[in-house]
Image 1 (cartoon, one colour):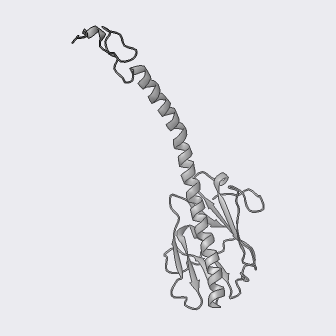
Image 2 (spheres, one colour):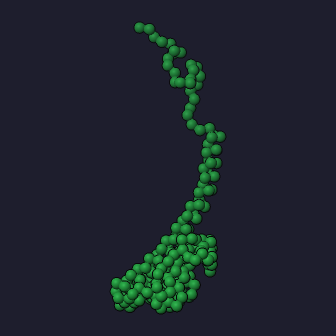
Image 3 (cartoon, helix red, strand yellow):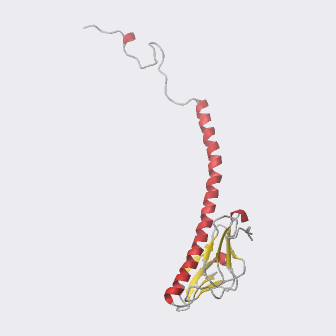
Length: 195
């Protein structure tokens, strides 16, 4: 039997006999470049994520009110009674003032002492205003908002101002609930204003 010398034993590809083995890993320069790239990506991603979350919060708040208005309208037809959505500061009774930011209730004339639905106030400094200072939207048994002399025009705002505001309205008499799909604009395209 013939033995091979250590110099002739098989070596990993790229290595030669007598050369030290190269260790896998990052050099300090490669690590600094990777950290720099990660920092740049974070600087871009964090503001975009914050803006996304703020937009999502305003849309969620807007959808809560729209769902409440539509629910009240359908309940009025179902119960064959007047049902109203009103601003409420305490979550148990209508406040009588148009402070929608504090929350709202759905109340039926069939049982006015027991709200059908209670929605708590907006958070994070967001605001909800009604352009005509209406504290209540009433739907009659046919689903019409016949007591509205003018449309109920709701604007949702946050700290970013009118550019990002959201808008919904209840049409006078017909009671139709509509929402603008464009931030900062009414359904007709007029610019919104925030308090």
